Image 1: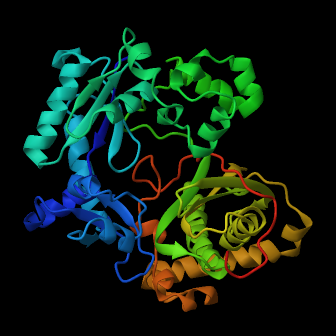
Image 2 (image 1 turned 180 degrees about the horizontal axis):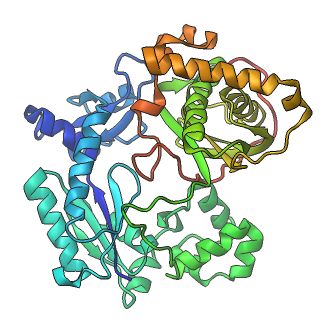
Length: 429
């Protein structure tokens, strides 16, 4: 298998420069609401990066690091348009194109030898993206998806890097274990506590020990480190059977009040419930919550629920998880809600169902959906929304990319966080 991983460099900031050529050479940051005290940097140019500006910095922090920083708002429809133009270039070489976010894709070019070797195809793509679209892309070339992704991160911007079966031990094994795909901060910390700090050390560790220490994910990471990933790249037209439906968002400012968290969880849950209905998957029996704090630590938890497809049930379960589990007491930067465990519409009837309570709620939510379809999303709102006009008009389903896996609005699995099992009692955290 010959796999490429393409990663558009400083994508949001570069598109801003295409829209506003006068920004050329200036430090640029694409941010949430500039009027918000806790608005954050979502992307930055190389010039801003050189000044120490990081993704996740608050706007005031970024401006303190870079006095001449130009702050631009998010223009998601523009980013989608340019992302699709880049994918049209990829499609010249292969039909096996699997998105990993708006700015990243895997490509399987095993059967594309007409266009040359994997490295030659990567170079051709890099040149075409630069010359035709004035964007730059870093491309990793390897024999599986995990190492192709890692290779694309080794040299940026506008570069091609090859990690082959012959050289992967030399190039990959000395790297920090956190450089391996799907190894987040929490997992890296757990591995470091037992002396595993590099990918080579992870590859050399006993797989049985790793499975016992990290669960089944430990065995998977062990295989990844040894170069044994065999996950195929999906065909560009493949429709994978949905195992989960979700949505996530990075808000325009850090969130410090529980009531604000609850409000945004309802926004997300409405989107999830609508997608669940559209997909015809029936009801879900598990709700997952993902939280990222303003120190960029991520946490994820889940709980079983009575099978449901209702926004209110999903939001209530997600908020319950937040109150029970989130104890970091740092501002919340991003939230995600996902449901899984679908019954395909074949569920058994419960006493509550026979009493009609569920069906009454379902009819109410369907009526609201119909009014929104006819008059717009903001036409009908829950009372909880009116304290925040921005949330009241936020159609997350229709407006935002929320998953590092494409343009379809699902979220990927997140690294498990760690928490103190003590609920937060006060209004702020």
